[in-house]
Length: 199
Ligand code: MN
Image (cartoon, rainbow, N blue to C red; front, side, top):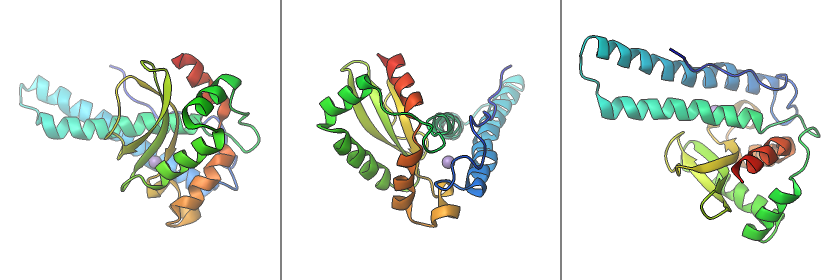
C-alpha cells in the first residue's frame, strides 16, 4: 500500500534567503512537514491494525487527526512549490492578472486583501488564493489549522503558511513581516500553471 512521502524541495535550503533563512526552511521542511507525513501514515497503520483485529476505530477522533495531518502534508507540498528564489518566480500571467483584476479591481487590491487574510488567520493556519470552477472566480480562503474552512472543489492556486513555526526563527512573532517577505519569493510560474489547470 502506498504511503505519503515528504517531497523534495524544488530549490536548495539557502535559496530563499534573505526572506526565509536556511535554518528556518530546514526545520520547517524536515521536522514540521515530516511530522504531518509521519502522522498521517501512522493513522493508516492504526486503522489497518484495527481492521485486522476487527476492533472499533474511534471515527470522530481518528478522522479529525487524519484530516489535520493529510491537510498539513498537502498544504505544505503546495506551499514549497509556490515559492521560488527571489527573481526566479516570474510574473502573474496575463490570464491570471485579468481574473484577479476583474475580481478585486486591481492586482494591488488583491495583494492587500491576501495580505490581510494571511495576517488575520485565527490561531494557526493558512491563507489561500483559490479558484471556483463553478463561478469561474478567484476567491481568497482562510484555512484554520490545516483543515477547517476548506471548500471542496475549489482549486488552490497559492498558499502561505501562517503557523508560527513557518517564521518564528526569522521573524519571531512578527507575522506581518513574514507575509511582506513572502511576496518576494512567490513562484508565479507555478501559480499560473495551477490557474491554467483550473480553467
Ligand atoms: Mn508549516
